[in-house]
Amino acid sequence: MTKLLIRWFIKDYEQVQDLKVRTSYGKMAGWVGIFCNVLLFIGKFVIGMISGSVSISADAMNNLSDASSNIISLLGFKMGSKPADQDHPYGHARYEYLAGLLVAVLIMVIGVELLRTSIQKIQNPEPVEFSWIMVGILIGSILVKLWMAVFNRSIGKTISSETLIATAADSRNDVISTAAVLIASVVSHYTHLNLDGWMGILVALFIMYSGFGLIKDTLDPLLGRAPDPALVDYVEKKILSYEGVLGTHDLMVHDYGPGRLFASVHVEMAAEEDVLKCHDIIDTIEKDFLEQDNLNMLIHYDPIVTSDEVVGDLRKWLSKQVKCIDERMSIHDLRVVPGMSHTNMIFDCVVPHEFEMTDKQVKERIQELVSETYPDYYCVITVDKSYAALPHSKGSVENS
Image: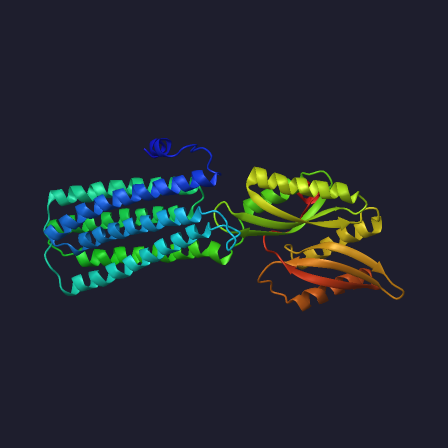
């Protein structure tokens, strides 16, 4: 069914990297959700009013709020597809993240309201009318919501949409809550135990727990979460595949919404190589990333002296020494400046976030290690934090 809808309503559906095609996926998912949720709301609301079941009525209102969530998602995709302008040069794609956050907040609100209503039902119990028509509608609702969960998750993964993945989780919650309502109705009918309010509390707690997790997931890209390790590895290996590139470090990826990734990175090349040739290679790398991966890449050129074997050996030795402190540490941009009384070793040292040592302790420890072998060498260290991953060199990639 999902594939059939995609082929019917989305032109060029295989070109998911195209922003227009991606927006079409999101809009289709939104309209399908609105249609299904409105139908479920009408059916459950009528049955809830007839039977007097607070859990069924609450489940109906849940479907109505789901339709509202679908409208929010629809608006998120529509507003996110707006092109960049003078005030928003990076585009408007983060509207989709905001839409996902609003959906998650609505889920939390539904959970709190259902909890309040269920507690009132326990305090003031009322008999619930049972009918097989009610059972049929609830079973039908479960099947529809199960399909919607699979539908939204499939499209969400296809176009990498946090909003649709949140919507899929909401549909999954509805499957669980409606199944709980159905079980409570059947058990209450045959045992004469009024479980309506108690089952409502369990469903409400589950919805609130799920909503909290969804809020965290949708907030992460807005706060600037670390890039996907698979993307980091792909970017670094691709850069190292170009002729003349010796290493790469300081990769930073900025997420301005789905399909709006910007990145900057330092690329190490031989200082003895012709500058114009190196510049041409860097231009090619930036162009390839934009055309092949839709990634806007800005590259900083780092010249590395390769003709001086002493400096090369010192770089390898120092790299091993810092890993004795912590395997996650690394160094780059090493320069050696000889002097009359001592020699300066100038370099950057990358340490992970939330490292147990302060920057001052890191510098002191490295200086101690260097002084044991090179007593006349003085370290001038800049301590960096890792924004994506540790630096790679061609040697490390080939050995991995």
